[in-house]
Image 1: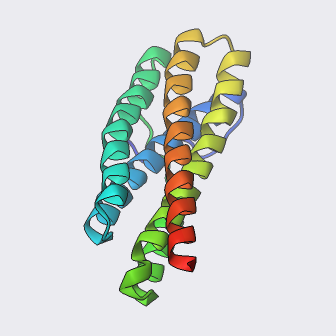
Image 2 (image 1 turned 60 degrees about the vertical axis):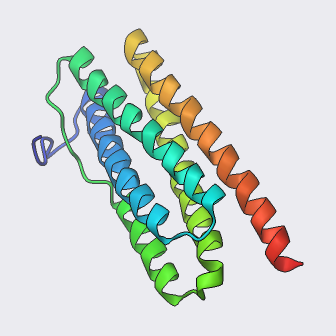
Amino acid sequence: MTRAMFEDLNTPDDLFTYRLGALLSAEHDSLNMLQDLQGQVLRDDVRQIFAHHEVETRGQIANVERCFDLLGKEIDDAPSPTTRGLAEEANALLRKADPTLCDQVALGEGLETEHYEIAAYTTLIDTADAMGMAEVCELLRANLREEQEAAGRLEAATHALTHVSAA
């Protein structure tokens, strides 16, 4: 992997490649966060949601790397300050929260990360489509579907857990 491939973004292709690299970093950050959260949650059903999405995330990383191959570009690991910040927020909240709240904290932080990734994929798909990158679009759309499904699972679990703990 290279560092800071782009000093300046001068073309739509530069911007797309930079964002694709930032998304790859975001997926790696998410993978680390999913692994961390699995070790901190109390409920098995919540742990299973994170474990399932960890497997999906590994496939998503492979898909993004494949996009670089299809484009004939070196993999650029542009940093993703957003996902790093979300992981730091999760860790800070988990340190502060009563242990009985850790599953709610973890679900909330996971959901925030999914929403960021959904937005990033949506932007990249639109650009790839406009630039005629059909195979890249297909891979990114597959990842987007998984992110949307993961967000749905997290939302449902958050809703159920919030209503149980509020009762």
